[in-house]
Amino acid sequence: MDLSLLLNNATALAEFVYASPFGIIALFIFALIANASLFFPISVEPVVLLVAAGAPNILFVLIIGAVIALAAALGEMSGYIFGMIGVKTLQKFDQKRVEKIFEMSEKLADKGIPLIFLGAFTPFPFDIIGLAAGLIRYDVKKFFLAAFGGKLLRYELVALVGFFGVAWLKTLPWLKVLLGL
Image 1 (cartoon, rainbow, N blue to C red):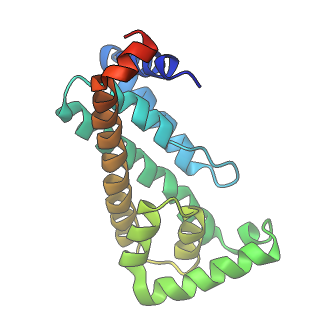
Image 2 (cartoon, rainbow, N blue to C red):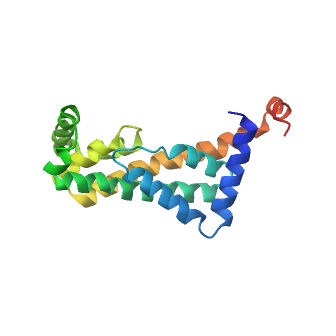
């Protein structure tokens, strides 16, 4: 992909988010749906990078990271709820995935919050953790707070990389010549 096209798209997306009264709300809904999807994973990181790249200042970058993290943590509650439903949900999965869910359930019983936090922070398929937590009826408040904490750290870092990374790229003289900036 052409880098100047990427920078232009980042600017257009950021303008929508920051100038439109519905920009932040649209971003929240996108992240909520992307993280609520158990069967069709949608990556939020490229959107966070692009929106943060066009942020007017660091405060907006931090707000974007927090909004995305809150929506992501709320979206991940869908896995928890499906896990609570239990048997009917498990019947829809293949045997290998069911075994992973039961393994994760055992680990959650021992390691709980740190495991949920790390799972939310990494690009690990977090749905398995959510399903397992719901299946064993792990404390919903602890689950949500650990998931939110992991997602918050993750998306704040992604947003900061977008903000400072693109700003740094724009300072490279050879890149300016190459892109005609």
